[in-house]
Image (cartoon, rainbow, N blue to C red):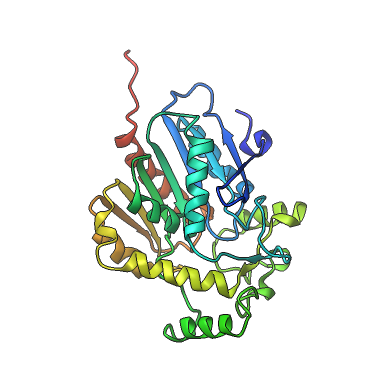
Length: 315
């Protein structure tokens, strides 16, 4: 099997509102029964190349894999002159990204519902879609979904107020406080907040160093306001209860990006969800150490085997 990073051939598609997004498709590994299509939905600031290890692990499990970069990050079109700033006006724009991806990239691959593997912001956006229209999905695996974000020592009630004030002051397209200093090109393992695995962190850093235009430092005030509005929608009574899609959700015990307690409580409200929490994991479970990842893939396989049974060969 040619590794995903070497086999990476990007394609591009356009959303209805005219944003150009980057995508890619990888075939399942040869010699494995084709089980279906799995889509990978990344978190904020991430990019396709970062997930190539995960993509190869899906391919050897018999999945054809499709993935893309959300608007404003990776190799997709950026909204602002400073390409390091993550900008959005409304999370409905991300809904359109996913809709266009499913229609233009995924649907030509298969006529069957797909499996989704989604992280953080990607999991948040997927939950919005599953709430509105779940027909295209056989099931979904969510890692550290963005349901309630850490305010890093600031009072939670204060952040939305400051966000609204900064927008009223005409600063909606400026970095949220502290984000400009977190340029990935200058990030060290000591300063990062997402993984305990030095090797996987260094691998991501080498990808950014080789292609600096992929990097994204953090959100502006407009993105933060949109995120708070969308998180309020998802956490509202009745939202989780309407999602009937089979889900496997993972929480990270040492998460410093999102509140794991919110993930845990949200999972209880879902009609068909199995929740697993890794006490030693940081936010990026898929980029964590081998101890965490081995447990992740064991749970993933048990979940996927129910949705896509593997036929045993006769002796």
